[in-house]
Image (cartoon, rainbow, N blue to C red; front, side, top):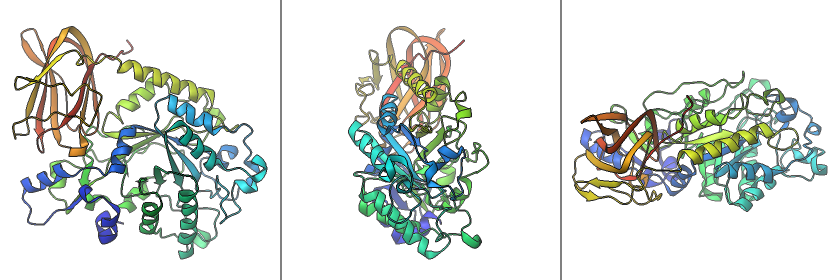
Length: 495
């Protein structure tokens, strides 16, 4: 399903300011100008500002020690002894995560809420004497702690006999309606593209447009990811995004069917690096028939698997590894979706909790002292005061119409540093194509680092240097750059 083939249906799903058709006769400058003017919808902007979202894979697989269930599991095996959704949400919030997505139903078809459309759910389990509702407990905890709540609903259902028929789409819509209308505000609805065989080898044709329209009707503020019009899958489950990540990409190249075919791999969920290095540079968009704001969500699990497995308790990613993932996902204009699977007790395991606590401590430490806060920052001889106000809604833009600009920085004293942070005000578009940071030493200007895209946030690490004079150079931009935040930091690195 090609995104531009959705025609009028698609036009109703996206914000008009986030999508544009390119007339065939458009010149290069006209296409670049159109690209620079595309901006996120309000729901996409809210999503981007989350930076960190937690994925909670939990279900019958937790109790069978499998990654994919076959739909034949006895609901009686689902019986967490200490389930505490508040512990899940509280731990995630304390680690800096601003939203939680729960696997309400995985491929096995077992529902974590008492769906009235199937018996294959918690109502047929001994947990809470068949009266429990995991979705409600997680939703209530998210609302209590003031963070976003999202649901994952697997399109593939290995338990339901309707799968592979037109009637299955009705079944799916009924369950989606339950989730969207019974648990308060939903901030993200997450679909993957898994589509295996149904009874007698039947293949299901998913009615995506119908699903999308229902979400827009019942939860209009929710983003639809990653088989959806708001957020795309980055293309790998490693936690690492592209060095050059454009949120404005050709609509005609985003074929959902190809994404679906790549998004699942049963054998161990091995990371699959199938990313093109470039989706939205000039060479790509100049050939496009349409352009759309379609940012990347970057998913990875804190463990080798996505569901909890006791043999992986000593294989949880370390705080240092999580920091590296953060720099390579959030720091590359993406949102990190980190999976943290509850165990058979219904709790986040101590190994995961300790890793998250260490991650939060390292994250706070990394950004506690911005050297630009007390620096004199100027452009064209005039002071700039908005780049360190921790407000991405205030910004600086050069007066000159050219795509280049130079920001001069004088630190309070000689300092060591090895990390640069930049943010564009994406409410006005993504524009920067090339930038660099230079420092003055030994009587000359030397390059500390350079990059291509910025977007919502870009973080670059480099070998430590010492100086008191710096300059940030915007070397190429699709229109006048709009810089919201900037920072220079000394990141502690292990020797």
